[in-house]
Length: 395
Ligand code: UD1
Ligand code: UDP
Image (cartoon, rainbow, N blue to C red):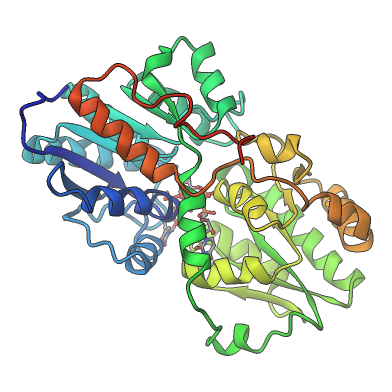
């Protein structure tokens, strides 16, 4: 731990993919606002290239170091190896007091491993999420577990994430319940003025057509599962003449090819390139419901009071599902159609899925994280009091 007398603490913030940038941006901003306390060094692994740049540009974040690691159709072993090696060199050059990571990607796991080898403390945002299935989400469940084992400060978004960490033997004074930083990002972006100026999206009539927003990219769904998802979407459009589908397709060629093969050229199905976050947030605001296998969307949908059907068999984010705001439907074609039909036809069911408190955050997660880091620097034992922590039940 850095000495109290030190002028400012060097925090290396690492991000590699779109969701990491969106979720860590609020923390970067708060750290950069306290230059007397923190020297913030932003390192982009660029595990993603275009998606990362899109998110960085919206939040006006310029990485101090960009490792530019993405390769087309990268495999997990080579990506893990490249991040580990490059981050090891970068850590030696920057010599931070602490490394801050967010989430469950290969960037997170390999960067934390590099920090561990150099005995540099790590703080992990969004710690403690567990599906208890090592192969779903894959490899994210294992990335998160291994990251926990090498982490010094665990920023758990919710009480249930904290409980998961406690069950694994993590000391209570190393865990801080913060709320999810995605709620901070979403609240900020969604109140900015916006109009759709894109030719396609600008012409959509959300009063005439109900918008069903779709995303799907999970590695464990590649192949038959993703095909099932696409076929179900095709059937839904045939059955419901008043819906339109917008599906921003992940740039991974495996995902792109399947989506185009099954859904390309169909009336009222719009396959679009990945959208920048502000455009996507405004589409979410205007949609009727969301079909997705994304992690972050599970937290965003209840924030915007939109029902979500999850195209996976398990989730590491159970809160919205326990509260009845979202439903796990998996990748079975008939089940996706049935559950979507129910939501499209039954307004009472629909209302039940939107009227509730957001269990994931209150927009003050980044404040809590930075406050806890300041106390960690001072060597204080209690990083946040229970009163200061996020409490989903509090008003
Ligand atoms: C990664 C994360 C996943 C996260 C997702 C968010 C891992 C193992 N996976 O999955 O947890 O949910 O990001 O989107 O860390 N590509 C581009 N341009 C881009 C991004 C990706 O062309 O900007 C293509 C490339 O061909 C690349 C491939 O997608 O090789 C896969 O990217 P990768 O980051 O390995 O996996 P994702 O499926 O994006
Ligand atoms: N998102 C976006 N543009 C899109 C699709 C998604 O900005 O075209 C945002 C979405 O709102 C969420 C994040 O990207 O905040 C989710 O990223 P992704 O689905 O790639 O990863 P995951 O959440 O599954 O890790």
